[in-house]
Amino acid sequence: MQEAFARMQRWAEGRLPALTRYRRGESLPILLHRRRIYIVPSAFGAGFAFLLMVMLVGALNYVNNAALLLTCLLGATSLSSMLVAFRALNGLRMESVQAGHAVAGEPIDVHLHFVSSGRPHQGIQIDMQGAQDAVALRPNENAQITLPLATLERGWQELPRIKVWTTWPFGLFRAWSWLYPQERVLVWPRPEIFGPPPNMPSDNEEIRQQWRRGDDLSALRDYRPGDPIRHIAWKVSARHHSLLVKEFEQPEGKQDWTLDWRTLEHLDNETRIARLARWLGEAETMGRHSSLWLPEEDIPAGRGRSHYERCMNALARLP
Image (tube, rainbow, N blue to C red; front, side, top):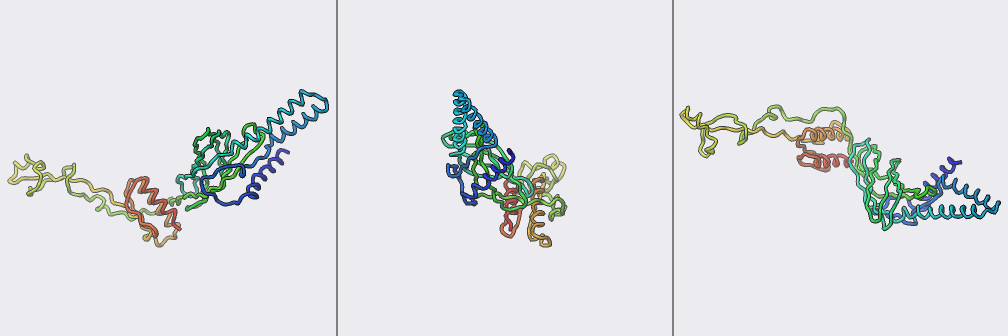
């Protein structure tokens, strides 16, 4: 019987919003009010109601005023808990949605920001595609819930419907509502596991030295007018017929990686994207500067987390 009641409850949760509201995205913020909050007895509540009926029949049969008073008090309390469950959701507002970063096939963290009204909201459960978390808010308080969202492929992914529910305070009634924010999350492409390296500069270019003022002494040369006096090697010059000047060198920085979509014309689009994503990850790990050319965007050379995120976002947005 309990399983049958649970199936009926799940059916009601799934069908009532579909019958009374359009199944389409809503712009933020989303406010919960009396027209979108649904309440049904829980399995425990149904059992408790059956117990009250037995107590009522027994009290009337034996004309027991004390038992009748107790039954009426318990019934009034249970009905009052239905109002408390409604007020726990009423006035709750979803203010914004933010998403982290993840590659296709890995869960992405979705941050849901809620704001309470002038009353407390106790025992609130947030459910999104099986991921669940709980929150309690004091009056006029903000809270953030982070739930993982499964991803399958790169690009924009619509957020699913989010169920907000509670059985507060006694678990006798289940109040719930559906939120369908009109928001999307951007999923990064999954880098390929193995593949060739990008077009690297030659070894001679990689070790090329830039002769200029630096910290490491490299050689001595003849004095030229305009050379700083402090760079003259006086002790060595004393043993020669001319002045000698210290030459300093500083290694030239590592060459930038130029990642160009056009150099991978022999590959299909998704393989190109996966390879460019791998090269970007390797450049980020090695601390190299990298630039990215795409058909719809040309990103100049840079490095660091912000540059990596910008390039991966550009790859994810490709058609």
